[in-house]
Length: 252
Image (cartoon, rainbow, N blue to C red; front, side, top):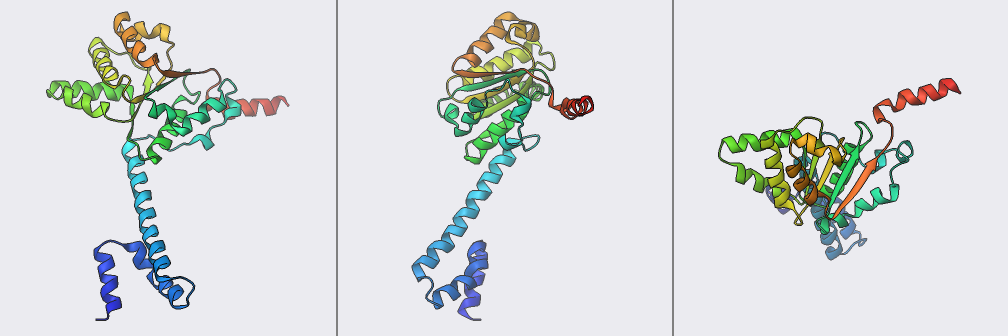
């Protein structure tokens, strides 16, 4: 067995597949004096590093649990003129995560709250910062289940550790006292330490009715609103977008 074959086997055993796949190309470049040995080895090592970086980003995105993948480039800002585009795009720099600030998206169903929260979450995940997306009802049910198993504190710690936690659709389903108390505990643990994004179809004035307790509602809001960015989206549902466009065309 030649040393070349042994080298290929070693690269496969070490899982350095980028170097293995590009080895012949760089041997030719080095032999033809187009690259030095040092330059060739450096570039081959960079191929492996880049692949590992992409794998880590992919793992971070997959772990986040997004229901779908939609970025800022997929959002039609012209359809929602009430949105300050510059403010939304500024979230891409993730300064709010560094400062442990929150973002609260308010608006009727279908206006793009979840889309924008996912777009921001994707940016954070690509930055290899821990990100997790969860529907509010699923979150509360998970906490209740953990409580029955005497694991509530462990579950709260798990949800508290994410640098960015996205809680989607607060207000679509009623929240009982037990669920409200558990949500408060979670928000309190994250308060001023890490960032949370909330999407809700309920104005803050209605949260007392939503939680069935003004005291708990105010306590949750107090911790969410402090050091937060509030984005109130007023406009038509994206789900009606095509229908509205067709109606305009028919009128024209």
